[in-house]
Structure formats: C-alpha cells, structure tokens
Length: 515
Image (cartoon, rainbow, N blue to C red):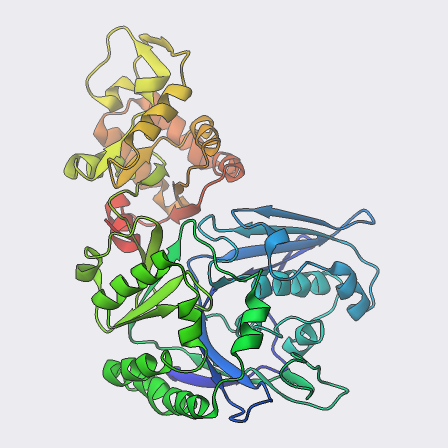
C-alpha cells in the first residue's frame, strides 16, 4: 500500500530504532535544519510553539553504548564536535536516578567531520537524547519522548526531540499545558503554566521539491552563549503573527506539499519568514551570513536561515544543478537533497574531493577522461625508485627493478597538498600508511571499497588493464578476507562507501557530487 504524502503520528509510545549487538546498543541520529516556529497556542503566555524542520540524513551521528566494566562513565567522540561545548551537559547521574540504575556506561559518538556545534544545525538534543536512549536501553529500559522531556531534553527543542524518533521532515506540535504532576514550567519568564511535550507529529513522506542546505565551514552562531536570552526576549510572538503563520502552515505549506504546488508552498514560506521570530533570527547574523543568504535568495525560489544560523537552507521546484554555478561560496559546504532521497554535494572551485579507492574501480579512466577535473596520484611514483620504469603504471606495478624511496609517504602527502584546489577530485592510493599521514593534516577523504559481489569484476579488470598474475593474486588475497577492509576502519575517513555492483567511480561521482 502506498504511503500517504503526509501522515499523522502519535508519539506517546514510540521507541527509537535501536540496533543491539554483542552487548552494545547503537542508535543513528541526525543534525537538523530548523525552518520556523509557529505559535499554536494563539494566546500570549502559553508556549505551545510548534515548528517545521528535518534531518540531514547524509550526516549520520552514530551513538554506541555498552555497560562499563568499571565504576566510571566514559564518553569518546570521533569527529569535529566537542560535546563539552553543546548546549546541555551530558549528565549520566541524572539518567541513573531517573531509571533507578547503578550501571555505568562507555559511550562512543561518531560524528561526520563536516558537522560542528553552534552552526544552526541542531545537535545537542540529538546527541544527548541519543546517549540517554542507548544507555537506558543497555540497562533494560525503553525511554519514550515523555521520559526524555521529563529529564529536560526538548524543553527548548521539541523538534529535535521528535526527530530522535521520526527522522526526516516533520511538523511537530511543541509543548502543551499539563497538570503539575506531569508538566514543567519550561520558561518561567514567559509562563507559569506547567507544560509537557505534545504527542502529535505530521511526518512528510513525499517531499516533492529540492532542498539546498549551506553549512558554514568556520562561522558559528550565538547559540550556547546568548540563545536563551535571545528567545526570552523574542517570544511570545505577536498574536496577529501567530494566527497568520499557523494559517499558512496548515492551509498552504502542507497543501503545497501534498498537491506538489511549489507556488503555494513558497508563497506561504516567504510570508512566514517575515513574521514571528524569524526576522529577529536573521537580524543577529553576521554581515557575511546575510550576504550569502542574499545570494541564495537571488538564485533560488526561497532561502532562509536555520534557527540562529549561520547554516542556511533553500528550496527549488526543479533540479537546481544549472543554478549552482552561480553560487561559488568557498566558506560554505552546499548539499542538494532531491525528491528521490538522493543527496549531492556541490564542489566549489576552491574545493578538492579526495577519494581513496581500491584498485580497478575507475580512478585512472576518469582522470584520463577529465584531466582538467581529476588527478590520479599513483603511489608507485612516490614509494619506489626505478632504474628503468615501464611507462604503463599497471605494468610497472609488477616490475622488480626498484628500491624503496626513503621519502615515502611524506613525498606522496606533499603531492596531495600541493594539488589541493587545483583539481575538483584527487584520487589516492588506499594504503593505510598514506591515509594515516593525511590524517596528520586533518584532511577529509572518502574511501571506496568493493563489496563481495564486485570481487570478480575487480580481478578481471586488473588482468585486462595489464597487471601481472602476481599482482592480481595479491588483490584476490586482499578481497578474500575482511582483514584489509577492517584495518582501514582505524583511519579518519569522512565517508566509507561500499560499491557492490559493477558501477565505476564516474557513476559514484555523478550520484553524489556536482563537479
């Protein structure tokens, strides 16, 4: 049965999508874009603020928790996020008190290296909520949305709270009045009425438009420093603004999505960002953020700031690939999310994509076909000193007339660094020594590795391109056990993608990037 474009979900008894294996509990959560808030109370003083937003599903945050064998907790993070700088501190003592447990936990958080705290992409609720959910599950407890709210999670971001259980694009209904036994006074400067989390979410299953998300590489927002003061001074919305925003959401925004009517959808969004707190969110941005926002509005149907920025988002009714050339914003990473669920990253003129790929997956072919775009840096030119090198790289790999180059791998790394910004793509060897050396320079790279169904094609292509039997046997041995692949999991890659069909790197690049 076909899923409805938008479905109404009751969140009261929902459980997270845990994975349990070998005594550990893991959960994938995602950073989020916050579009705008709408005051569902329609009366000042009761903060039943709903909002619209969605998860960035190409940037998963993996949380893994085990019971600690000691009487202490440990939290380790791989990636660019400093959990000590999140809006809320990780407090596992609070969790233990809530679930009545004496367990301690070993927590590991793996974050995409493009993500940083305080960029307008919600992280605190996702990471903290995910850690609490997994830790409780390890101790035999299933926490609900209401449980997390009782521990203080979601008081300032019911959107983030609901996206823990409903990743994707949602409309959430914020908080609602409650009795003193079940509710909390969330913001005493605005209301003395106890509230609890609302239990209704509108989940968008079929979003018909393209979404463009611009994430700053360095700039940060005021969140974490002045955010609470900002919202205290900004809320509640004016009554007339609230009425108009809610009308637009339920009569135009949702209608535009269901009916695939971009005109209605965009018209409502454009009005909503002139009302409520959105103009204030825009006004506190830096001059650079405002400049980039203006350029995006010149190019796309609609653009706005995510929460307190400086991350930005835009919508386009059609494939925006022909428009992206007008945006060469080197201090932002741009991603395009298509209606089919695919995600592509735009490579700016100063950007270089580093891809470390297994043999016979199309590196050399692509570089030869697109010499102005891609460079294939062959490792034997740096690792070996030949007395009489064959001009064909693949034949040279089987020759014996060479000695080790004492400058390797530093000389290889220098070649990579020297060519950054000169090519959109640089192909790397998959040697762990090289990748470890690149890690010292904090370079981001993607690893492409063949799946088990690709092995036969790898070996046949290697023979066809001129590799000798000894080298082909070497590749066969690498792919016959998981040891080589598992050894690579210790390096600091940004993405590790398995290609299990017969497609080559050109198809991978076309699927994931605008070059």
